[in-house]
Length: 170
Image 1 (spheres, rainbow, N blue to C red):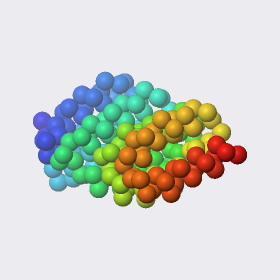
Image 2: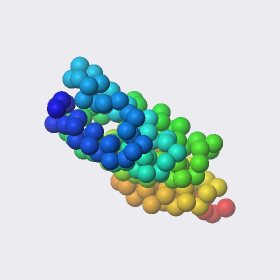
Image 3: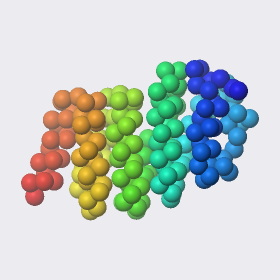
Image 4: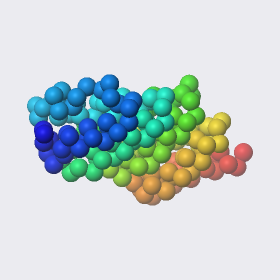
């Protein structure tokens, strides 16, 4: 079994193989080695916009599990995850994909830190708060607590309070 930091690639494969949608994915143990450990995030990140909600949820759990490992390369994840999150939050995507992506933002915010959350996720918040679908707005409201605790009081007052005021007062 290949060992990347404290992370066992076999553990990731066991989690991924629980869902039949991932069976066509390449074998991580033979594909990745310590020289290119940054590529470990590619499969779960690519599965974030899968049409099957169960596959997306397994991707979310895999990403959170990878972030919990203190030896994981957070910079590599940010460079791969943030563009996919922006894509999944687009108006052309289905509401359940946008809703799941908002919930993922709430789960990973504490791992990514203030700087990444403010630069990558805060600009998306006005569109989420005024989304046409109730479930997306509800997911945004649920995740606000986690996001606000990460981005700090100044950004919360400047951005989130003004969003709630603008969206819900009109």
